[in-house]
View 1: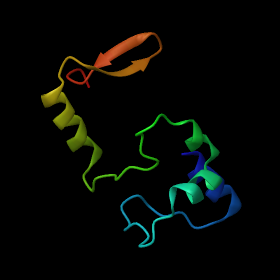
View 2: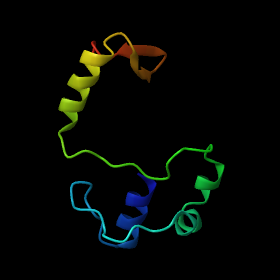
View 3: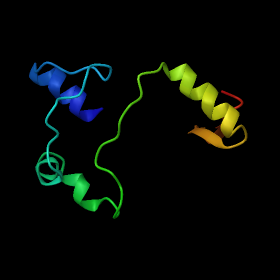
Length: 85
């Protein structure tokens, strides 16, 4: 989110999440130079994730089926389960 805002403010073109990823993925060391917080990630935590090409509401439905009573959102001292969403 912060990178998208920074690119917008700097006037750089922003790649949409549904667009294909660049062919050459940067190495973890190169990513750590760009994103210093990655150095604090626990061992085994991936620096990036693949975002599936499906609408958000499909992901919420799938989560509601798999984890109906698990909390999905904590907002203003209230907890909402997937089934409530």
